[in-house]
Length: 535
Image (tube, rainbow, N blue to C red):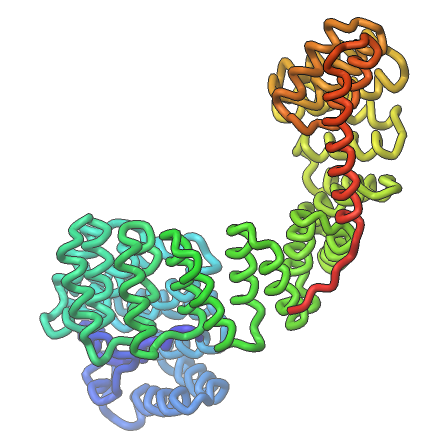
């Protein structure tokens, strides 16, 4: 288990030692339900179970407790201990019921409340209501035992995590003064004061925390989320303190890298993450973080290097293949992008985003028909996303299946998020089929949704040029070039227009188009090549 549960057979009204993980059996005899004779007392069974649990013999402990419960079905301590065994063996629902039964049998049994609260805290990652239930449990205990140190501390932790810093602080102040100086308590003080914007007090407690010889990583990690939100500098200071004292695990190095990134210190972030990677030579996690950071800095080749290493470590990790493929797209490395994304889809065929990305890459290949299946899969997985239908329509268009393309595009031609592109492709279909009036109407509709749509202006100008409407053609083509100076279609048709009308700008425009054509050819060669990525 993540948490060691309190093992207590103490008097139901008694208080376990603050911040202890187990209570001794020395005061078990004070239980009012325990008879003092050796023949009529659950105490021997409790002592035996305690010993067996401490030695990890959980099945034997369970047998002892079940036998004892047949004789003493209303003994709270027996139910409490059985709950501990259940929790240690991963039977969380049964553990919860046993702790609750212990509380019903003895409503002022502090140990059972603490065990139940800890159980809920362990379950917080799986049950969204677990933290709320833990808070209610500790609150119930504090209603009759307001000085219970463990309950006050755990309640303060939970309230801090929820952002109720004043309530958390009030309960920390209920702790004995000696406990208030413990590192893990100082950490919560620090987070509460940071959340309340009392940074002087937060920094003061951080000083005390960093000067403590007992400082551990586990004291700092629970408060980092709060500090990231309210005082990133303080979070960095504490984690740097752990690193300096050589008390930081590789995962904490990663936390520090994220904090550096959050404050724009990208080179320091990469440096600390590379150190984390060296500390975990068999882990892909820091390499993926490094790749993400490099990608954010537009260092795409650096990102590919990290991902290639990560891919060697975890060849069946679909996320790595997907990330690798997307970085290859940024570098126009089409063959590598296609291969990596195809591997990602093979490993995780039900991931809609992998299918969408692979479909997008396939539309750029010589035969775009392969894209259709991936976009169909995306539409099955995300049936209410109009972008999937739009992409499927485009895939049919590039596959020269204009009938299917038109049917899909019309489905999303009135949706504000997809209307501009849908009308643009409907216009291209109409122009390819010489339906000039419809083409013009669709291109104008696309521009009404997206007035800076350079491609729509370029194709509208091309249609006007075909119809010999030269002034309208020039107006549309010039608008396209203003928005996108290197637009291929616009510059091509401007060249044709000027030559056809014997415009004095024809020579300059022809030279301009030749430059764009050359650049496009070079990009196409790069796009189609495959490179070898060395980790």
